[in-house]
Length: 358
Image (cartoon, rainbow, N blue to C red; front, side, top):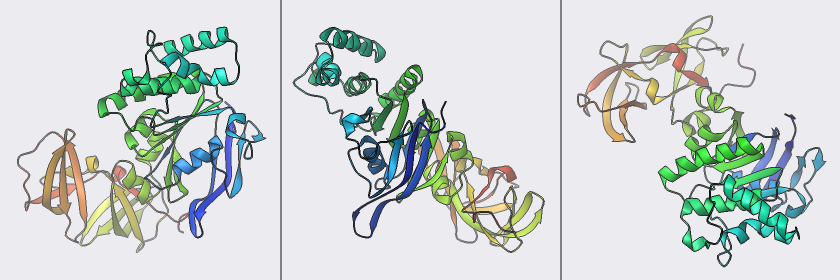
């Protein structure tokens, strides 16, 4: 695969003076890659997508597609199509006419349109639905029609702006698998927008975590989840606990960190100094509640959701962390004093200075 199929070069965008929506972002996307822009509302991901599509112009910077600067090109000149959350289907047209609309606008021969519509219906598994109107379709079926219409023109890049946001949880998960299947079968570059970390992890080759108009981290789902670089990424993807400690000892890649009056062991490749304050990310599933563990806490509250028991703990220094595990545990009660620990390899130092410390 080419290393520079689509490039964003130093894109900046503001909609009001002093309110930067994009702050000089750079990204290289390979041909056939499934890349997800992940972030909270207002982080700039939709603006980025609109600039790639040609629906918005950057204040500065450029968009390159297969070595061509397409920044100034109109949307219909870019060979890029977009799928929106609200489907944007024509209500007065049937499924076949919706799918073939782009080809009709391009004055493709009727036989070609008919053949392509048939191919697309088979691709999204909607054979036999040609004559139905959008009002006769379920939400998942409407989204499949929207995807088929976007793919009918054979775009080089497909942009998907929270396309599953209006669907219920079970259908969203089914459509996640469908989209990934389609993308791999067609080999088209997909750029997907979502605020849902589960979608991003399940479908993406790479994830771009956005925060306040900047890229916090770019990496594979494994890198983003298991090796976050910042406290924002650790907390946003997987709801990690973030707390601070002071380096008390170091021995090669093994350090001891003071958490108030208690000490925890951490394995790290990062360069640290004794006495340095470090920020630690620890996922709730890696917190072990054990009777003879070396760390102490008080149970503040517990709740059960999505098959997981979540226990909010208050540490002796006043910090709060959440432990999570599958199943119930009736023995844990609010106000209870408990012991806890974590494996040294499971804690991650985040928000490190670039280049580390000496």
